[in-house]
Length: 298
View 1 (cartoon, helix red, strand yellow):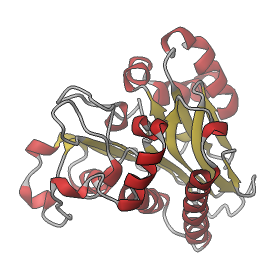
View 2 (cartoon, rainbow, N blue to C red):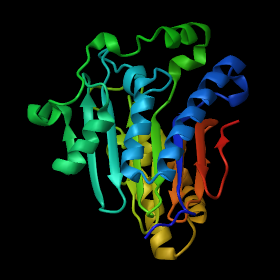
View 3 (cartoon, rainbow, N blue to C red):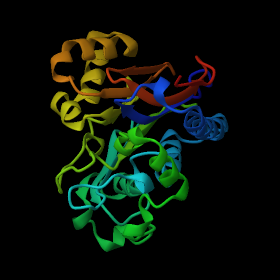
View 4 (cartoon, rainbow, N blue to C red):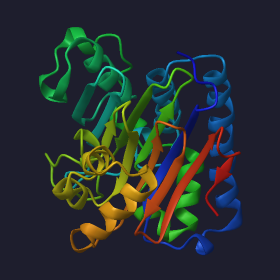
């Protein structure tokens, strides 16, 4: 059944310890222009009837291919001076998911996660994924990551960018009421080799269920994992019969002692309402739905 009044999408580019007012105006404009373009293009696809899961993948591919975020090409290095990328995606209609961690030579981890969802549902280490599964994806060298000239120029002129927390995520509700979510990250800068982020864990950094909502989280992964944050919000909506907005507030209040580090999330409920919530100093986001015209971080 088509529900044209409920479609919408939201994206995020991660939380940060910096204050938005401290971002130079020209950098602010670069991010906002990038977000506006993604929202406009993919919202039009939603109007034309595109499936929510496909939109999530398309959006995150664009963000992974940019150097503006700590995901894909712009990923930060671990203690071994290597990138280690994590990604997950979930289909709220079929309750299927795909997740991968430890990627260091694939351009778009989110596409691998979606392939896993379709063919081998589960969470896999990049080391143990079969060559047959990865054969269709773009492999890249170490030089590919963080080599964009625009990003390096911005990095040289702005110290706060060297500690970017820019995990990326997307949540979508399509015309048929199908929810989907996805998250992709390079993880903590200087992390220990082998660390798995919340972005790779369904129920922590990523979750979608047509009965309630779709969520993508960002911030200090250990805190998000400890509280299984995305699924916790789903369970509050489901068990307490409250709105997604109220459920998010209840979750953050209930576990506030365990969320002492920067944490933020985007959420879209089954009615198309978008919720942005964080305890961080800043979070990059944008969204559009039938409930809201285009909205972006300030």
